[in-house]
Image (cartoon, rainbow, N blue to C red; front, side, top):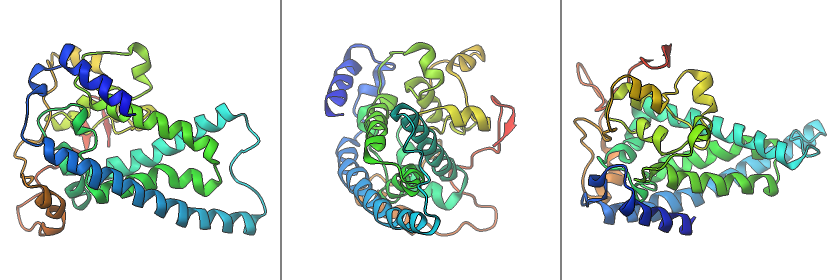
Length: 276
């Protein structure tokens, strides 16, 4: 993952999607802080909680039912594929909820509060969101009894794709990006246009976006006459200080009267034609 980060960091200088995204936005120090506090510490807490709580629940199920729910006799390839689908479904539900539930959006807003995308923005996550993300990613598979041998390929792939998705590299993987999340699809998710930002919620896969009608394909966007994706939040009120960014979701007061959350995503995606 570190090697991938460094390679993509170099490529951003030579083949950038947008040159201006390589310029400093004054948040690099905070991004590094969020990497360690939000992402690394949050992931550690989330993993420990998931393994402990879900592991106990899995053991109880095995004792109660007398059977192993995970298809451990199946070929490893099929087990890994099942894990990808389950983990990505958990992440899809968590990610989409973060956009559609105002009290959850407060924690996710930090990740969308920048007007550039590059490898440094990958780990700009609030610690509460990261804990929830890890639990939703791995709880279903661990509950069913998936082994470490099955979990490892997803952990590696998810880490690599996360950095690649946020990179400012003008590079495409072709048709594979219709199934696996890539930079083109993820930039659309970060779009200032909320009808686009309400799509492409997957983490490693786009399968659930296809099934639930929240997928926007880059070629589809081009046919509509859109140019380069501009990312960020119109009217963003995220604090600029590091500690304030962490505490802000807890300080926000419930909205009253005609007030509303800074971002209210539409219930219908004009690209999918379906209710989200």
